[in-house]
Length: 132
Image (tube, rainbow, N blue to C red):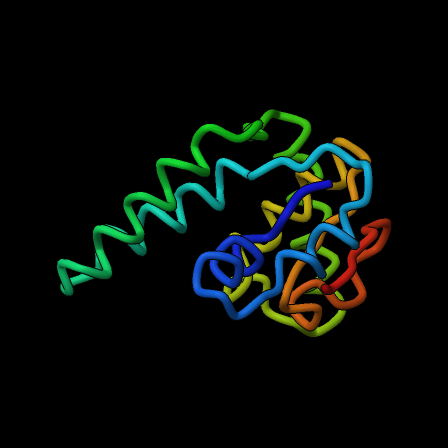
């Protein structure tokens, strides 16, 4: 199972219950996307409050120890299919680029995707998505 960035942020902030996440993950191995690591790194680098920045750094360092899914040429193909699907269905893929990359990784590896933002992944063909 791959967790969307929203899950990692929600767990770190206490907005998402770890029990709810564990219930959804079950016995599946949990991965973090290299895309999520980039988004979380941006959150660290763009934070001006020193205390918050330190908390984010600690959280990011912890997450960097998890199994990471890298972007491959197969991920890129799946991304292209998903972005074209969104455009053909009248939705702009530009506003959800990182979500599409994460969805592409889930599809490439036949993993379910756990997110706090179901609407971001709504209607993507072949994607198994759930929310805690």
